[in-house]
Image 1 (cartoon, helix red, strand yellow):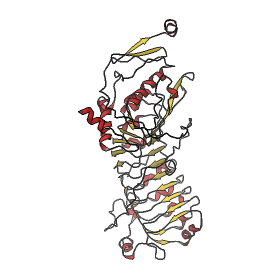
Image 2 (cartoon, one colour):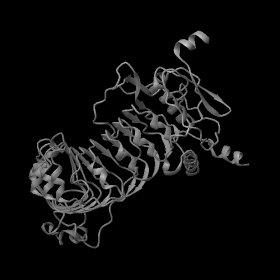
Image 3 (cartoon, helix red, strand yellow):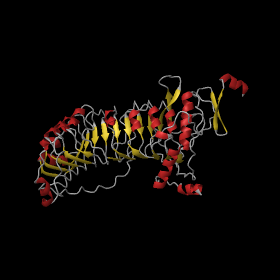
Image 4 (cartoon, one colour):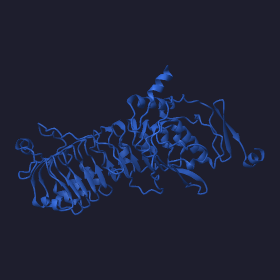
Length: 482
């Protein structure tokens, strides 16, 4: 009866996983993990090893990919169909290169399974890919957790896991020493962010579309990260004036659609290298400081849908590099003529939903009066203004934002790694019609066996009675006797 229920449960359809299917996959991952979400060294996967391998790294990679293939429950485009045999470098989505420590030895350096719509989980045995530098699996249906065994991926440089993962922030990523690009977008992570994250030497950090709830007051003051995107979370608090301390490293900062409050600190004007500043759809109040004229490289400035008041300054409108300037749906009541002249230039400009007396599509006088008549004294706050003061009452509701679909390569401006890759991405190919796998049952619980020996170029594995047995074969002996 249990098997029949599981068979009925797994009727996958492309781009869709029900809550029960996600829970089922997560339970399967849990059954294959020991305590602390990890596997100990004595665990041996149910993998048939009956091949000669080029070297020990390829041997370990074979074990890792076969464990991963077992953990896949739906592969509608048959991406992993050729994941068989000892020629691991020929597997689709897998890239090889000479080892850094031994140029004569070939190792796995990259796995790119982006946009392949695979459903499953990440097995702990992926820690055998110790030469891996890039792991991209975004826009799939992987769920469960990120195993703690990922701490052994000491050469990993980029990790992109835009999927259906759950739980608190995966602290294991902090322990990956060479990690520079971290993309955790569009998952179901929740809770507070660890302070160590902002001490890590990252180039880019993407946390958008999760359920993180941290207070950002002191978060970014010492971060060396150049791109920080935290759109569509539940962050609160105000931007501290310590943000000026990262003026030499910060290039893009996107805080859109959170619960951030307070005045914007004058120190934002010190961020002379910033090209994108997007704080739309929060509850910021106060004014745009004259120091904003220091944003000499800014190309996109978006303060839409906040509670900012007073004048839109000439210094901001005429920043030399600006291409997009949006300040709609605030309470600005003064707009200099030079800002209006932007409409004649090749610049995206939007001022609707404010309190400008002679402009179309503005708020009503009554609505404006509730806020404009009660100015905020920004100089009295630890945040450069407003952080200690509650917003004026009654607060007008934030305009409802339309649901944000998952980005594609064409419409998401934050979907590209700033890190120059050494290996080309997978060449796009015309995908065949989706093929749905028949129902598959949860794999059995792990089998504990004696510690496996270290793979070498002269090892041959066979499977006898569900026990992985090792046979040592010298190359010459193998060719003379077989």
